[in-house]
Length: 322
Image (tube, rainbow, N blue to C red):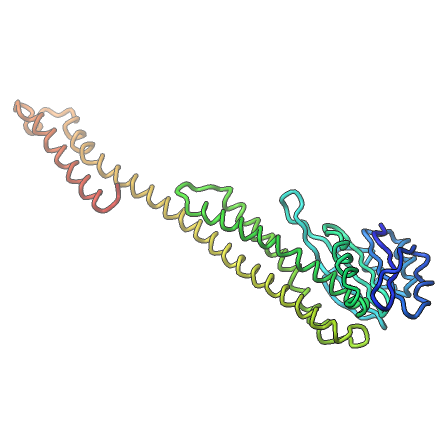
């Protein structure tokens, strides 16, 4: 449950790994701060963190119960942030949440559900101690940047799959699986947009507000993450429109194909109607029928029928009904 718990100095250097019980001792030292990473913690562990950091009980309650909406809230001299995350699991997009507590001298990340580890973001921060001097605000930037950047490969996969489906849409044969996959892809894109869109509002607030917690030197970094989130959001909107168009085109092509089949069936029915009508006349059991006693009547009947069928075939072929 505890992924990492590290103490840092004011000059951005990693001091040592610490236990949860040592957090309050570290915070008593003015020039040190703490970064804690948790993965689906128990209620007892969160209560211990609440005691060590003095976290607000409502924020702790939200962090324990997943399925929160994306938001940023202020509790005294600390921030509580909920951001949705995404990850590709067995070819499917799975979504999770990350809850972040940030104060002047600490940052706590709590991961729920599908989410990659923030160890890479932490290593990147530790390799740039001159930026870590900006405190927990820079660590918060690293976490949010990591979350947003993980959406790019997912968007790229969506785009590639959409291109494949567009090729299938214009094939001659109708595939029910294509429509089903288009619908599923659109549904996943809607969920993806619901995950990334609120992060823009969170980043916008971090760029403009909370002067006591976010240093001015960190705000340009949050602005850069905001630009990335905006790009992802625009990409998802564009792909949703393309998916809607692809579904409409697919259904339209199916309707056109059905019309072509109906036209061909109608054309062949008209072509067969002429000899059927003539043959039905001479198939009637009457004594007085035209030319029954003439030896040339049968060849003439065949010739007339063939002529009518040939003329009908030419007319229907020219009208593209055959």
